Length: 133
Image 1 (cartoon, helix red, strand yellow):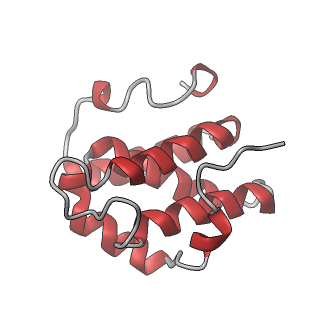
Image 2 (cartoon, helix red, strand yellow):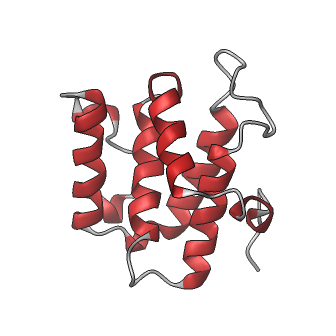
């Protein structure tokens, strides 16, 4: 039986594509490139028709949690505000990482370049389990 650290069903209803883009644009520097990269990977995975509905529900739940400003640790808390968001995103990306394709990685990295400019790939290295690197 799968152990849940977050009730994804409770947060899935908060997922909205335009709200996700707004949140990422607004907090990308504060949340950091790692959190943004993982959120982007999840977003592009959710759009992939080969991903199962069950996996998409986890993804939408995690992205909904990320969007919601009133979560366990409010995002405004300097230094800690995004740690719970990142933990949820990281747990979900780990649980669905076998479905990450090179195309999904490419799309996420292109968006990172658009928002962060040239970045050091070492900043995002090691975020994914070995089978996707």
